[in-house]
Image 1 (cartoon, helix red, strand yellow):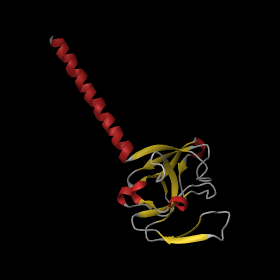
Image 2 (tube, one colour; image 1 turned 180 degrees about the vertical axis):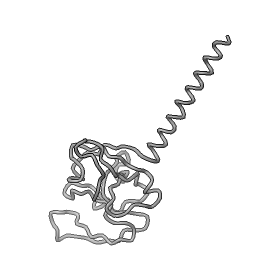
Image 3 (cartoon, helix red, strand yellow; image 1 turned 120 degrees about the vertical axis):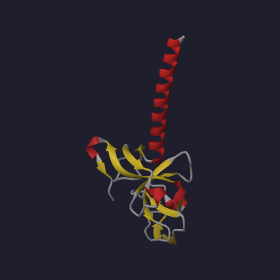
Image 4 (cartoon, helix red, strand yellow; image 1 turned 90 degrees about the vertical axis):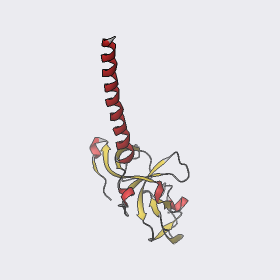
Length: 161
């Protein structure tokens, strides 16, 4: 009986260590740093159409440290199950001029980005569904800032403007 007690105590200690590790892993992934697979043509030429794996940090947007030119992961306002990767073009209070149809440059509109919102666009304006289609994005839909490409290895490095 005593032997079973020792085994049970050891099993509980190990289960506790594994539980703590999994909690730490979850907190790190959700609130500090995670990786994300980005697919599609909307961010060409910055990101590959076949897909890149990027590192995303989840602190900047919580601390208000985002600015124009940053690549961000956002929850789609049209389909909350989807995550989009776009570039911030304008912050709240900035005036932005855009064209709904990039093939017709003469038909442009201007607006001031409202408080608590950002204006996001894909680098490839011809195929990107972005703020030109759904308007200014609420700041609360930003999930993180993409800062480094880790896959494919030939493109490894920081994501600049």
